[in-house]
Image (cartoon, rainbow, N blue to C red; front, side, top):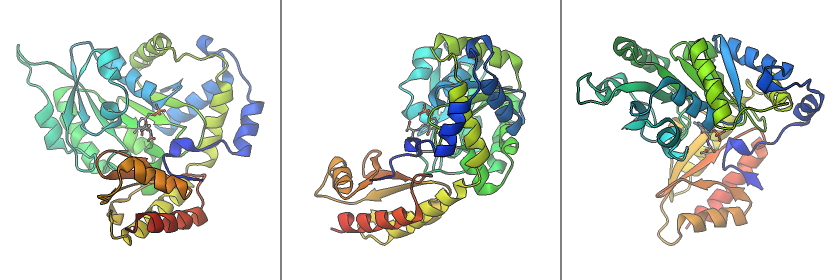
Length: 343
Ligand code: TLP
């Protein structure tokens, strides 16, 4: 099976499993797991921040960022197709008690004028805007990279209004690999950054919330405990993360090459609409015009031929490349798409 549903499906490599088995561990709730502490230090310094907190998932990292920097009854600015809006089960409302102000981006990318227009005035009637959230790369936007110049402009607005910024950097390393910009070049503009080890980096579990603000990290640590995300001998998992950072960052460009190739293959199929130039990293979003079959039937027909993808609403589909899909499998998947989608 060629599994293109997500880069979350990656399984630990042999070297990673060995590193996990050998990991020195302690109780992380006491702050005594040396491997967790090493991973946290590594990621903090990679992003040019003072602190990092290891958490089980990207969703938890985003939610801790929101909870730690807002009060119930406030509002946060988010892009309308962002992960926080679509895929976190309403956690920002349910757990932090904040309201989401959706801003429609261009393939997930908001501009500074849009963000400024979404900031509420400070008057007796308006809800306070407490946080601005960006996502880089943008998942539903098709793995789009936030241009640094756009982030800088949004940051200028945020500073002018005194509003902190959070980056959902679940796939920040894909942006880093693609642009060769240092991670800190992005991170410097945000009070908090979340980063996932369990996507293209290939670790089985784990994300980090990163910040230079001690108070934010202290609050996030308390909420991590409240949300059930404080773990004990988590060094076993952190060791996988360290291995991922040491071995799997630069190779992400292979996934990007594969995604572009896949998009070019899909473009040859008359029923498929895709813009290969829009594929910037490892995510390909495309549309299929098929009057006879439902999205579920199309997904099932592809699965029957050995290729897994996700239907993501309407006539849109998503294919994600990752370290468990080889160049040869991309060609095989291309042939399956041509066979199943040629009407
Ligand atoms: N994304 C998953 C699904 O939840 C949709 C995927 O398959 O792409 N931020 C972004 C930008 C993400 O894409 C994801 C996962 C997360 C946060 C959440 O990470 P986890 O799954 O670890 O909670």
